[in-house]
Image (cartoon, rainbow over the protein chains, first blue to last red):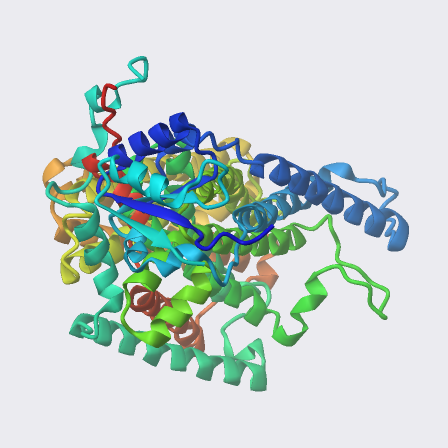
Length: 178
Length: 461
């Protein structure tokens, strides 16, 4: 497959509302490979772009369970098998005393998996991405809202897509170089 | 799309949180300009210099401590804990307000928190860093700190997992790590803003590396929101557990004055109390100097003052209960411990702490006081002093006069006790003002969501 000549076409909007409407329109037109860039989270956009639910909760759950098991088994191994201390004949497997560290390690592992899971799901760190080739894209972290239809979309046609985005109350439409 | 919910028609409850008239652009520029400007206010230079000076004092204390040992402090058996553990408990308590604001208020959907959570979290991190210094230094041989963690070693020994002191190691190090992660996750979008706003090449490179290529795409945000929510959910029980575990250091011992079941909630309430006092002490001058009154509004100060008043009343209840249970227990040692507190060598500290923590916060009932930043600032300082005295009285007065009269000994702090304490205040100030200058002290993207324009106005199609 040959690489398309450009990465995609990007439209700039002035308000979250017009971006959400544009995303809905593009979706209704049949565009699928597109991405919206905003300076803050917009709930309606997730639904307009049909973004699947985040997989993060599952990652965090697994991390938390692993942490809990690590905490408990580590204490069990140390206090019962590796370094047993008999104090007045009290049971070696003193599970109530393990609760605090089991809890702490559950939280620790879950929080670490939340952070690294977030980075993995976002594909970060990413040293290069074509959208930054659009000079005005710097405003995506300030006050402007962008919609980019990617060239990989089967519906994508350079001129037609540009014209379509122009018709959507966009402030400016520009091509995104690779 | 006519069946879509008409969000624009709903009430906008958050509009009063920040002053009217802001746009996405002005909010971004105002917060980012504190970092991106070349001009540094004199206030910043003064505070940073003072912090740096005290930090040098701390380094001096540490060098002396390494050379001579913990004998430079006033700790002598039976008061083995002295200032070190007092300061540890005080600092870690201060950190709690940051997590409360960033995690618990997020879960409770209190959007006013959005403009104070960033610096409150930074305060948490630096307070925990200061807190962590004390147990480390108090070990006498801080370079062997890794002995506290279980690892395979040639000595064939392992930590005692049934000891609350070992729980503390896990609780505090988990708390520090999770606070750092939570803070950093929240910073990523703002680092991207700084990367895109700065004209300095070096700054762009540094912020760019830290932002890791954040683009603010809808997929990024959806994962980011989920991560914030999950981290908040994890930090909430964590923050309550940390001071609970700290209080276990006391309650699980049998020392009179320590051995009681209400310590965990009492400590957590006290932690939040002192933490909100510190939030106010930091926020009031900062918003004035940097002209951020539109973002950190009087409503923020008033809400913080209300939290302070509420937790202060819980603390007051705990003091009453502490005295009552000592009397009601009929235990001669418990009775004596409280009696010594009230009338013994530390009576002055005890009565001063009651004045600071119970009597003076009652002025917060008045709306006039809550509306006056200067009075709030003073009240917060009084609370910080009071909470430090509380930790001091609990630790020192209980240890100094326990069971056997023959082993009693009064603790008097040396100048190195005071110098180390002042040194950690310096470390805190130094780190905090470095943060103010290098990172956005208010979460820019969260403040953007507070603006009325951020609501999507759906057009009927």
